[in-house]
Image (cartoon, rainbow, N blue to C red; front, side, top):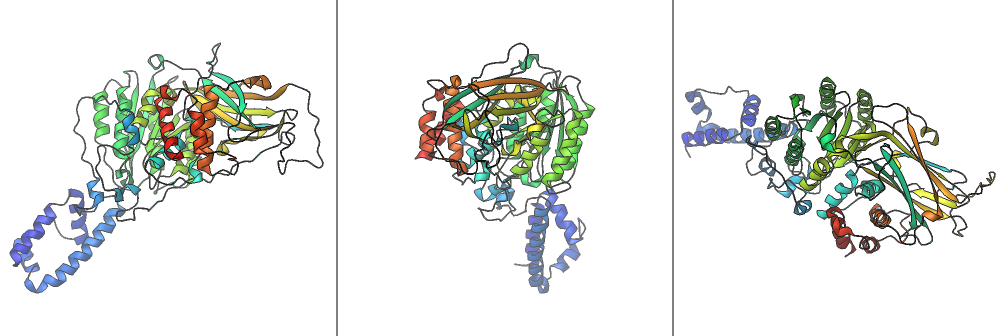
Length: 591
């Protein structure tokens, strides 16, 4: 091959590079964009071909490493990372998305056709099993004697991220580790038929006793808190900030493509009185929209469709910019909320879980609430997502499909956006005359001290329009001859007060714009144990049983996927597509 042909091939290869990679290549070579032809031919003289080849190979390696660090795809056109790069969709009229149940089995963005090697969220070229996901360690609490600890106190939670995250793992045939499974989020994923609030109160409390399906001789207590459901057409105006992670890791399947589709669904439901801001973050932060009227749907959707990924992840900077937008456009008496969409993989600025918690705790004082939407897998940081939701007057969801996005941002939009009660806390007082021992299933990260219940300075959980909060207790009745290690007291004896009550459930809450809590109490007796358990009890028990199996809990007793399946089938599960999907998961797990 003569030097002119070789020169032409090199030039053609460089011209095929994306502009970002061409600019980066030129900077690394320290060469001008154009070079006179005679000098270029002398550079490719025959005597220099061998050293030139070696230098070019070294340069390609350097560019690949640097490009990866900066979030740009490598310029090898056959590399799966390059295949994942999506061209922005051309702006057009709003598209009516109507995902069906089939979407539930397709966790990745359907617009992507990518090599599975690139789905880990790791750097290009990483092994397929490379995984940097992070989860907080869950330490299960065992049985407690009401003689020693009569009060069980915790903050409410309507988070559901754990269930949809694990569902995605199971659908892909991946292993589930115990720390992924938060039992309360499994149970709270589903809706229950609890009595609605009356008399203008935003919450109602109910309770039911039944046999514990995985522990013969034990009782299962189901505590239900039902929030009032507000017609969104009559809801106050919304001031929403879409805070979207567009860093390099969001190029992966099931991330930015699905984020765009999710926010397009939400944009379709905006009203003229609503305000929308769009803030993105990677190396820095960009405010793409600032207080745009919900009437301008086409403009909002065009901005969402144009989003592309690349760069590091300065999540803290994005949070600061988003809250400034929310405060600037604050609507007194309205729904003021930041909606964060990310994989949680912060790597620039404030990155530790503790620092992020302190940052977001300060931001909640602004009166702006937070919703955290998690996306992707392989590098997903569940611990950071949980901390942000817990400390930011917020709730956390994991979006593994377009169907899940529709559930959170369309079907349950009122609950996602419209908080009807804040700082919601629950406290159950057990009577040792009727209860030998008890244990709360889940809520490990939401536990409070007994004295925190009536302390209005202590933060609780937020409950949105139409939300259900469900808590389950496994109870060993008084008089049981079952030995429970560690519960006998040597120096302290208490004489129970005669009563037919087993326990009392108490709930404290504040109105969204209030600072003083209100109290609801409901005693529970053996009369609350029905001859035939309700659908609520059967379903919650089945979900909790399967969660105990996945948690590999030492308190699982006789729990099994087959047992959970048998109980779930006793309910009218076919009437609810999400329950029907869970039954299919149980069928597959039970073999």
